[in-house]
Amino acid sequence: LIHWTHTVTSVTKIKVHRDTVWPESVAALVEIRAASKTKVVFLGEEGVDAGGVQREWYSLLSQAFLDNGLFIEHDNRSLGLNPLYAADPMHFVVLGRFLGRAIIDGQVLPFSLTVPLFKTLLGYPVSIEDIRYIDDTTYTSLVYVRDTADVGALALDFTWTLPDGTSVELMQGGSDVAVTEANQAEYVAALVRFWLLDAVQGPLALVVRGFYDVLSPDVMFRFDYKELELILCGTSEINIVEWQFETVATSDLTASPALGWFWDVVERDMQPHDRAKLLQFTTGSSRVPLQGFRALTGNDGQLCPFNLKGVPYTKGALPKVHTCFNRIVLPLYPSRYLMHEALFVLVNMEVKEFTMK
Image (cartoon, rainbow, N blue to C red; front, side, top):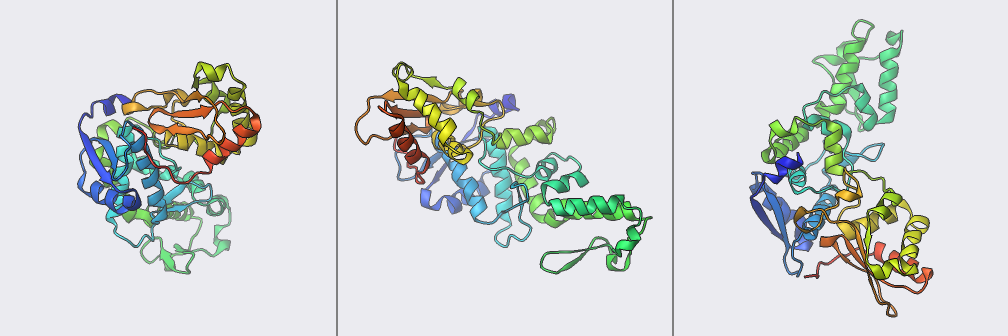
């Protein structure tokens, strides 16, 4: 897949304003169908897209898909398509193209999509085990129905009641078909199909359409759904030992206690969500690539390690980041306390403006 993305040489420039990134990006992706790499310009800002601006656009647009209701969160906090989305259905085509373009651009997205979605994108069959990724209670109930020796005592028919009280027939005339030992397996299969496919049939078909507008099916079908999940979403687990091992630090930092204080604060003082924020603020993504920290990229998609550059300390100085180069410019703080305070100011920042040239 990485080899194939390197064969994509055309570039599409997307120009958006930060405050209107959602409607302007949607309008752009409606028009862009072919495979191409993405160059992003935030209008009114000085940032040059050497990789970091593109990554922030992916982060902002990922959040916009969430904020605008295209996803629902399941029990395990993974995201599935929202079957009740009432706005323009073309947004699901845009979502599919967005996912496809993320693969071409080598971007790890800052959320976790549900396994059945990855299976469907690649044409894999779904099964009762996939219900676990959506609703644990339903999975447990279905397993009981599948395995019970006296299914007739449950007084079931071929319908399913939605949370709003609406009854859905799982087959034509399903309300008049009782579940018996003879059709027990058929009932379970119908419910699995409803939960994983039929309930989101419209949105799912549009996402698949958009996905293959920009990607070659011949290329994608060589991969399994687990590989696709790791390529698109990476892993949310941050291995601090690996992070530290793969980090490059300037000589002034390695000769200073400030470097040890930096990693001590990251390991001992930060919660997982703090570390994710620090990683996102510095690299543009809160998740680690499939191949680990050694696979971080920077300028134009080339490998670029997480790196720390020491600068002399002045009173009140805060760290600065160069997202295009996965770099934190870190003052040589004279105490662990000041290092702690500075790093937590950094991870609690919400607005990131690209003004580096």
